Length: 362
Image 1 (cartoon, helix red, strand yellow):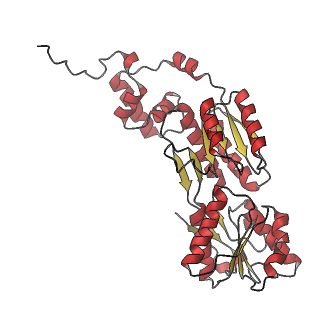
Image 2 (cartoon, rainbow, N blue to C red; image 1 turned 90 degrees about the vertical axis):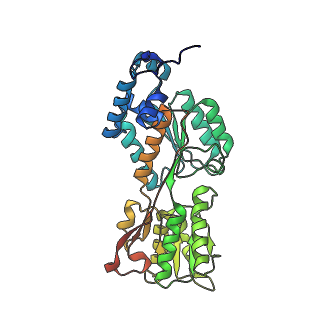
Image 3 (tube, helix red, strand yellow; image 1 turned 180 degrees about the vertical axis):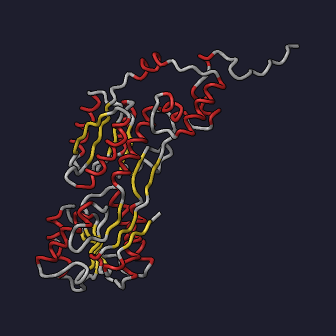
């Protein structure tokens, strides 16, 4: 009878036979985290780095850097595709992406799709030709799952940001995504307006259908119905300051004039406030106005704009970190990072200045 094999002692195996997966299991971390440690990435906490290094020592793992460089053949470039480059929110998002990429020695190629899927396709093809290591994509309205399947076929890592293609997170496959909880943010704004006594509230802005609009609209509908209020006052318009100003007449000339307007984003809200001012009216006194995003100008407007801070810069940072993890470990499980919004109450909703406060929506 054959003798049972002796149990291997730590460090007794051929170093070349120890895998990253084994190191990860020994350290209690993911394979992508081990890859980041090997690359000397600052994204890994010191305690985690030490644990991984201890696991490598215990198992006798030796990193073959030459072979890794041959396998990688990377360009240290990333594609960043946004859909509204003229919106200050996307400037903050881009800054957040750059914060992380710069520390890792990566550079981003930035493209504005202007909500055009054919333009988006062209930019992605061009980025593929330049051999980018991955892309952060805010999908243009009308993007379908076929595009993500195509990126899979190209073996091009992709993280969706702020929006996701309709079937990308509900399907069993899942996709990497970094965004904000739109529905919870809108619901908290409605709750605040109702607490101030408003019962006829309009939802203003947005002409295109995508996940970000769906989340906001779902929040409006859910909160209004929860309070037993009509949710039928929805006015769609382009997401520009001019459109926000122009829709003031539509709001004010209705048989039942609303007392509050919850705008899709700050750009529309700031435009609506200008439209009211042109008619001798004032936000917060004649009509409560709220926005969404908390762009820098929101705090500087007069009156200052009540809004939901969505931490665009932090979303950009999380999207970039997620993409770097995906580049390091293409086969790892998909990740979904949803940041909470933060209600910032200012004067445009009619609250007295003494009540200015922040409320975390987590």
